[in-house]
Image 1 (tube, rainbow, N blue to C red):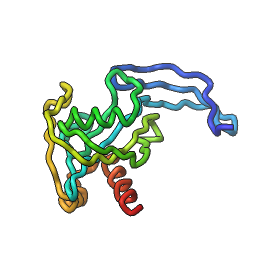
Image 2 (tube, one colour):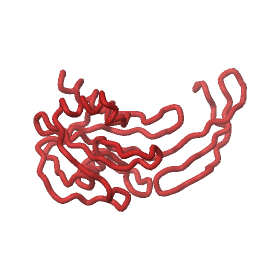
Image 3 (cartoon, rainbow, N blue to C red):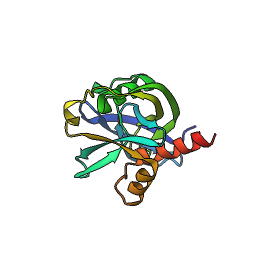
Length: 179
């Protein structure tokens, strides 16, 4: 039995990227409560890697009011449920113009398990060829660049890379490489 039982659920808000719902719950000890949940579809994150080089994108993150460097990542339009590997290839192409000859799943990431249902799959993209990016309107201010792993780690230490999914995916990459 789950420690929390959902008694009812109501949608509070919806747009093309997410829904917000409020659930009435009963805890295992019988006490009632509410839980707010952000529902977003599965996302894919891609680490484009060419030897010692990693390809990152930089964009303005409105909720933070800051431009941030991160690995290419995203969901399908209209909250569609898309195969994560297909989504990863599309995000890579859209945001960077890169195409991968090899795409290896590194693992699953939970965005913010205390408030969101969203999960994602991190991929390692290698055997890369360059092409033209196909950015969505929200991504028009995006920049992209290659960085050495040393530069990437310096940017993490300096607080220039703070995206939790990118940092977790980099840890999955390191574990993958160690076997």
